[in-house]
Amino acid sequence: MLANRKALKSIFVRISLIGLLSVLAFLFSACQPEVLPPQLVSDTPTASPARPTQTLTPSQTPTTTSTITPSVTPTASNTPTATVTDTPITLAQFSSPGLRAGIQPETYLAGTCEYLRLRWGKSKAEPGTVVVPVMFHSIVQPPSKVTDPKDITVEEFQSFVYYANSLGFETITTQELLNFLLYNDPIPPRSMILIVDDRRPGLIYEHFMPVLDWTVTAAYIADPNNLNWAWDWMERIYESGRLDVQSHGYTGQLYILSDTPLEKIQQEIWDSTAVLEEHFGTRPIAFIWPGGNFTPLSAQVAREGGYQLGFTAYSRGPLLFNWIPLGEEEQLVNDPLMVLPRAWSNSVNYNLDEAIRVSEQAVAFAEANAEAEKAWLHKYCSEN
Image 1 (cartoon, rainbow, N blue to C red):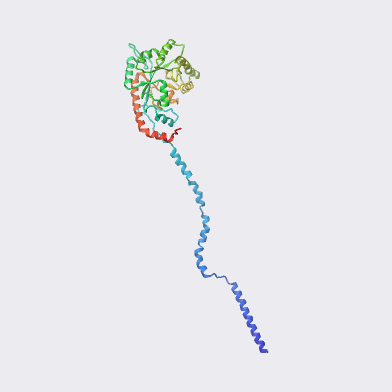
Image 2: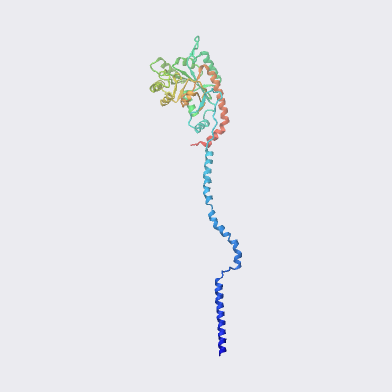
């Protein structure tokens, strides 16, 4: 019995030891770190660097690039390109080397498009068409001698007529001159406008009327209370259709200066208009400055009175379309058509030669620049 008890006790101790060992084994295994399977450890290094790269990419996204892009977008680059393309090139301007020092050709049309349309339009005057305005006073008969440089002898007048005719010059009226200057309307390629100053019906009748079929322009003094007998004579000559009458002032004695009162200027210019219109049925469009004197103010007054052209006593050179040679005094007026130059009768043959030279130069210039000017007209000027 005792032996049995010892045997049972031994068995119980073994069972207890086994259980205790099992518990300890379990506890020991729970305290150990988890060991990943070998295949996962070997694959991780190639995947791990990829993750930081993907994580960092958002911080280096095109934030900076998108900020810079607007500064170099096509908006900035297109603006200067369009400006350069649409800016008209500067066309060459005609100038004659024969003009005297201090004389500058002045234009008067509003813009290049208007000029080119009229220059190259259909039924317009030929390039190089030239006009020589000529100033006449007395034509001295022998045995009298010339004592005033404004006057010429009968022989000199006849020489002028012959020479001008041989060169192919023809005469035009003031209205024809105005239409040429403003619109480039056709006139003879070599034209003259012959202007006789003051009241000289006898000179016009005796010397100009027998000459060819030329017209003559009378720069007439309108005072109705002086030389009344001359009106009938002038009206008879006017009926021939070859006399063109323009204004030389109401008295013809007011030499306009910078200190001349405005009222006197207005009276001298404006009061002549109605008198001439009454006698000849046509309103004058040109004012020939008495004594050749003018000011910027007087030119403005003449414009306000309806005058569209003015003539000085300066000899500066011939006229072309949109091209008037002027000296410094005339340039200050800033209205070329109101201060047109006139050749003097005592040197007119030289002025005719000068006009031909300028005309030939203008023709050569037109031929050399025709293509560029027409291209400019087509590109930059609306057809409307």
